[in-house]
Image (cartoon, rainbow, N blue to C red; front, side, top):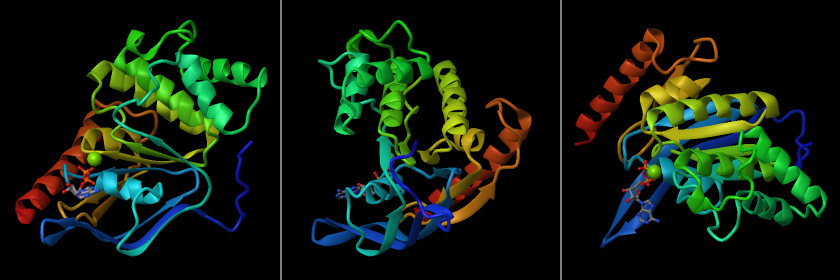
Length: 255
Ligand code: ADP
Ligand code: MG
């Protein structure tokens, strides 16, 4: 099923080692990440939570091969798919067309391609919306299409950059359930970035708490609450509260 054959000895789906990245900023350098080290095991769902500007997107960009590290290494074993806050669908294509394009880029031909696109849209509960164009879909529906498109890439690792940040609370709740279900079914490895501690605890096997700029892993929380978790449960709120305190502390220390 997977496009990439992984060696059995490869326990980690992605690894980052002493990663530092600095950007030119006027006549100085802006250090976005400094000495980030982390591993994500195959099939794990790990959340990164950090304040705005702590380098979360930069980390994903490096993992996706869009930015080069100044120092250190970042490596993903297998194929990567990305998802952002904006669904970034092609406006002139239908929902099915957007998913089919990802399949086409993988070399899937018709009639298999149309059948697979319909099946993927079914998996994200978009039956009946296949022929709609992006402007005819709600924000949540657009992210469902983006999720189907990510699945169409048959990736091993899904990198998600605040994908649900722009959605209303109820829609976000439903998409958390959807994502968890797809993750359980596919065995995908997911690195999920958010600035929302509750969302991180809702989804993550582990939560990595980033420092403010420059970003690095300040703290790791292993979330042992049974799944599926409720965003509103008191147990979840306690863990998220501790993480939020930690983030506030980091922001005060960082200035
Ligand atoms: P986050 O996603 O946590 O909000 P980012 O990774 O977007 O943080 O950004 C971290 C810092 O790096 C910010 O100060 C941002 O302005 C800077 N930065 C990110 N990408 C670039 C770039 N390509 N060139 C210059 N500065 C950048
Ligand atoms: Mg960001």
